[in-house]
Length: 320
Image (cartoon, rainbow, N blue to C red; front, side):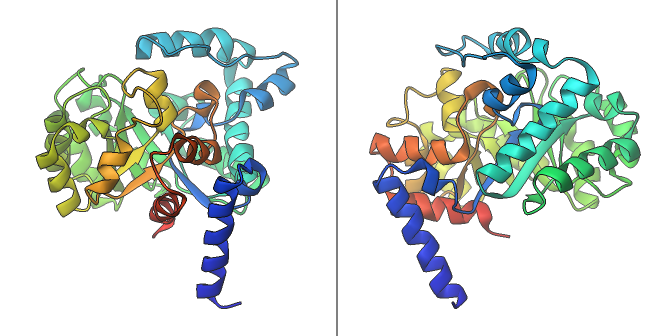
């Protein structure tokens, strides 16, 4: 079968899976997950079976990031503590990616995680082994995640060490968007850019539309994690579209954190209509309990986005 016919066949299967409400079939279609916090990327079923307990997903939206973290500590982390538990959660992320046919997977890791395993050499070897063991067909794209409240000088002083192995493919800033000005990270992002990393940051999840443009301009970002606040400003959306800035959107995360009302009214509709490249991702699957396939299904069932439009979004995530 030629490449064109194969892609047409995949497109039809993807669309038919949505139309016929077949999650099982949808899970066989190649997809991407470009915003996934590694230690939270598996499923509660996988962790529950390993820990021999039944974990119930959160029953209502969280009031804050702090509330989300508290739930995670009390319902997930307590059952898989320490290094062994951490590595089981990373394993779960790869198992989930393989099961949902995630062809392109960006998992993010914090500096504290690297230090907990003895530094970059040991850390990267262990994570690579888990990748080979549980998701060998998935293209793994490690992402360095920095806390927005971090000590800039300390992190900058470690950039040579963190990037020397050329293991990371991208960089991100996560956590409290208001902890310190995004411009404080300029020196770090220059170093990351020189090392060839894709430049990303969490912005516009809780802040304003102008925050999205500011972050892109200050740090020369190629992608934004979330960025849905841009939907409040036609000018900012037009600017993002003109500059081809990709937004890695996480619908259930946005709903569970109170920044989107529901799937039908999610800002991804406006962002897509303005020609902004958008992708669909999980964020913290162990908390939000929705795979990439389920996120596609949720949006389709809401009536906000057609099956053909969702396929175009799927292809955006898979492009090189």
